[in-house]
Amino acid sequence: MSEQMMANEDAVDGIEVEEDVLAVDESSDSAEGFDLSSPEGRYMARSKSFVSRARQLSDSLQHTWDAHAKEFVVEVPMGAGYTAVAEDAKPLSFKRLFNRDSVVRLEIGTGNGEQIVSAAVSHPDRDYIGFEVYRPGVAQTVSKAVKARVGNLRIIEADAAQALPILFPEACLDEVWTFFPDPWRKTKHHKRRLVQAGFAQAVARVLRPGGVWRLATDWSDYAFQMRDVIEDSPYFENPYAGVNPHEDDPAPGRGGFATRWEGRVMTKFERRALDAGREVFDLVAQRL
Image 1: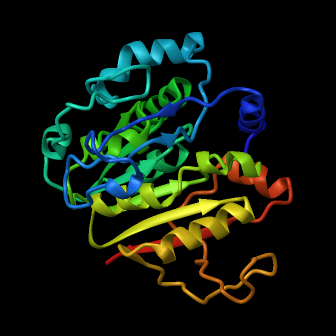
Image 2: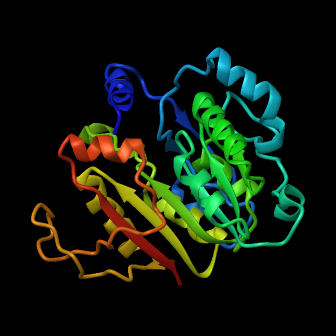
């Protein structure tokens, strides 16, 4: 977790947190109303898993944005604010986005693009889509993609938790990645964490049977929460259930953690976490 992310979390203290209300229908009153079988399914009231950050770009990134954003950034109808997709937006057509039929994988929270660009370079036969809410991160990903000369990558500048049920058809992906989401360290902020039961339902809806949701975090209590979300979900199984128990786990001996996935690159972010003495946890959820 970067110093900037910590500062953003600390800045939330003393501020009334804005809640988004994403209705399944006007009569629903909880996230239990989420319709997993419907492409139009929505979750109910949720807290954003991020806080607003500056959108201003450096001169060099602005130049890259002006020259190449149209090649990589997917234009979608937007709702209120910078990161909410319009509720009546149409689902994406991957064939139109990439001009071919291929395996498509999704990264939620691309950061500065190290992971998704590396994957696009290593697997030109696959197509990759990323969600990122921060304009500078999107621009850095575009810059890396341009330098790597990849064409099999697209970025959506939007909140994945809100946009995923709107933009992605049912059972359209074979893998989803959520690496190092904001951990929201303080207990009173845990409700803002991205990986919750409702989000797991949204991920399950877009995965094909047998598809994989890969996660990683450098905060142990968030890793235990991720494990619990996966194993409590009726839509996933944990292929590492009972494996690799951790001494700090509040459920001693339970385990449930994967070995490091060879496809996850060592980013600058992860190196900083390791240098700070934090352990990295990998998790895998397989769609039933």
